[in-house]
Image (tube, rainbow, N blue to C red; front, side):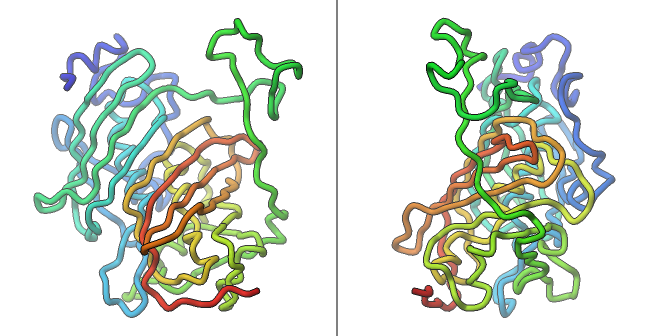
Length: 333
């Protein structure tokens, strides 16, 4: 375990709790959009922050048999805000989150403990605690990701003008193909869907996010799932806000569960999610493509890629989750 002084010495111009350095994107003011208000934290002591899970980003299970559950991406984004407030490095390069219990809509505490400090990476453990019980356990490694790509965008391979074998590691570049989507105006705007409006009448998660899905993956809305566990579409907030690291944490967990395409319904709780931030996103709508490789025994995996408006891969994630307990619908042939 690394003590506070060792973390602070990773960059001589920074100290714990000093906030992001001059080369970091500080993000919007927490008093701004609903998303920034919902992910706001207040420092109450060394490595300790108060947070408040917000019903505006909650999902409500049909019938109200279970309490509202705040979207996991919003919970992770809130933890990242606390970790980045202390980190000597500006970006959450790798984040792993274990969801231990459903967080209630009441104040909670984030406890941040630093495990490693280095010039290129610093790692913290951050735990969300309510009434003495951990509800979310995360490990976050911070570092620095590029704000732009090489001028020769697209896949690079030997013989195509790619990096030389003797080039520095930081000059090596290759990226896959982005997802192919119809234009946003030809996609399906989900609007508020069942399970996202709280019982007291306040809009939940769907009232805050804008989802425009590829028409090929929305048959489940009409009782005709496509028979393939995929989701893809455009993602953003209904309020005007540029994407950043915090919004990427929401985007990787922002689409309906991929198993809806197999006829599953109901809340599909995430058990563990790992996110990698690859680039600082350009302004504009994000494109998200998610797929599943295996479903069995009530468990399914979900891999997601997030691409920015400039066509850059900016985040990736993989999670393991439980299949929803709602009624099954037979996929169309």
